[in-house]
Length: 77
Image 1 (cartoon, rainbow, N blue to C red):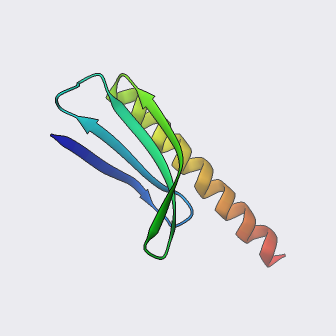
Image 2: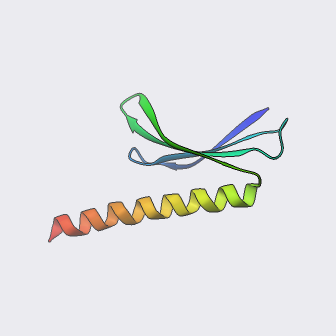
C-alpha cells in the first residue's frame, strides 16, 4: 500500500514523501508547484531510507521558506 505524506503545502513549494510497503527500500521525495487545481512536478528524488528522505524534504522546505522570507524582506525595503 502506498503512503504519501505532505511535508509542505505552500503553492510555490508543495513537497510530498511517498513510500510503498511492498518495496521497503523505496522512498520518493517530490516537489510540486501548485496553480489553482493543477500541480506541476518540479523534481523527484529517490532514497533507500526514511531518515534520508525526510532529512532531504525538510532541507528542501527550509530552503524554500528562506527564499520566500528573503523576497518579502527585500520587497518591504
